Image (cartoon, rainbow, N blue to C red; front, side, top):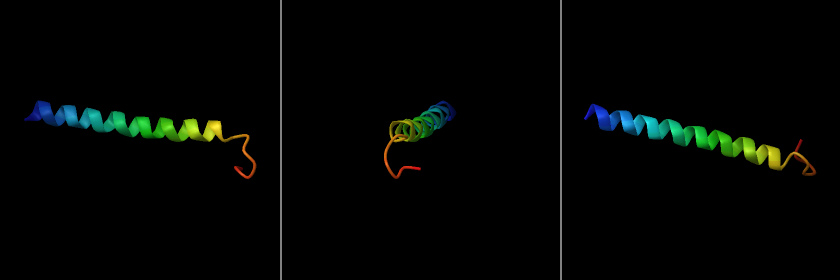
Length: 37
């Protein structure tokens, strides 16, 4: 079971990192939008 739990922990970390990258990408994409700042 520990191998499965380790894999789930890794997947969870990757998903969290992807969410952070999505936020950064949206922030960069909207930097020139009126009212963004």
